[in-house]
Image (cartoon, rainbow, N blue to C red; front, side):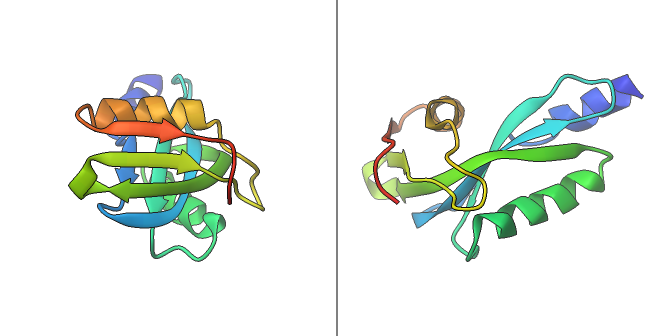
Length: 122
């Protein structure tokens, strides 16, 4: 079971965010049975609340036998034409995500971007 969970976990993208704009994001810790956990970033403009993103993510992961918990949220400003992403803010429901962790994940996904973060702002 651990091997299968590890394989399912490895197929979960570290980062899934919208290609442009300012939108909410959540930092989610994903676990498989007996497999190590990993943190993933999900950010989408369609979401009115951070919980909307988390719930959809949890449903998708559950189909692969994975569980998750929300570590917090914030906002992303994604400006592809400038190759910039700024991470800031917090989630009223989940609290502030560790933006430093989020920033590292984004840097791995967007190596040619300037990625910054701040604890200020909503």
